[in-house]
Length: 141
Image 1 (spheres, rainbow, N blue to C red):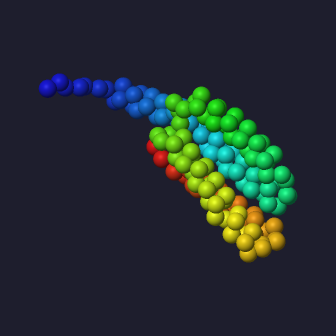
Image 2 (cartoon, helix red, strand yellow):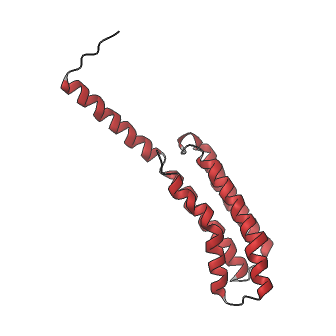
């Protein structure tokens, strides 16, 4: 059995170094929150553009696809500093948003004839909530 003998100054310097490394690692992963927030903003902008501002669907979809592709390309370049399973969770959340909005909320609001823009804003916010939930799930260490 080996025995370690450290002086107090040596031990405190090692603890301080560990804290500095931890702080640098948290700063390196700070981009991930921006990535999730931007993806949620793009999704909400798409829903509002199509249903509130009556933009053509395919033009809005192409812009969403282009912006998301740029965002995901940047995320894949920095994937080593992403939280554990972070990119996978955001990908699942984006797929959930698309299915929730396209297959459930949009057709149901059109079926009941919701004409107020506030119904569409509420539907967009509800649909974006799986993406927004990734902000807090990614903050675990």
